[in-house]
Length: 129
Image (cartoon, rainbow, N blue to C red; front, side):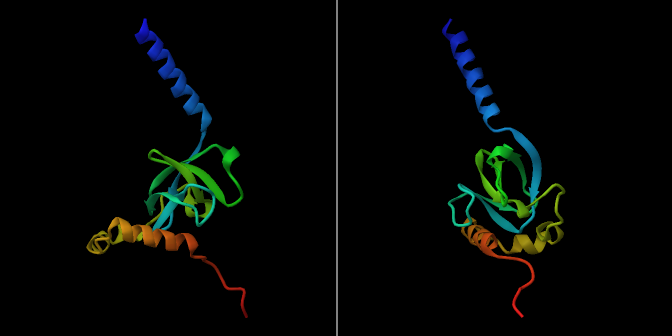
C-alpha cells in the first residue's frame, strides 16, 4: 500500500515539475565562453559556464524578455542573452583548431573569467565619429 502511495506522489511531482517549465526550443551557444545567469542581468551570479556549440534548451516563453532567454543546461535553469544563441550549430574555433585549444590547458577559473568578459563585451560598430 505504501509503495503505491510513494509511486503516486513521485509521478505527480514529476508531472508538475515538467509542466512548470515548458520546452520551447533547442539551441546552441555561439560565443567562445559564457555563463548561464541566475537572473537576466550581466552581473548576476553564474550558475554554469558554457563553451561554444554547447547544446541547451530554451524554456517557457512567459519567462522571456526582450534580451534574455530562460534556459536549461544540465540541471541548471537560468538566463542567457538571446544574441548568444543560434538554431544551428556554430562553427567554433575550438573545433577548427582542437590541438591549439587543448594546448591552452584552460582551467575552470580561466574559463569563468573569459566567460564573464564575453558577457560584458559589446560587439558592433561604434557610434562615435
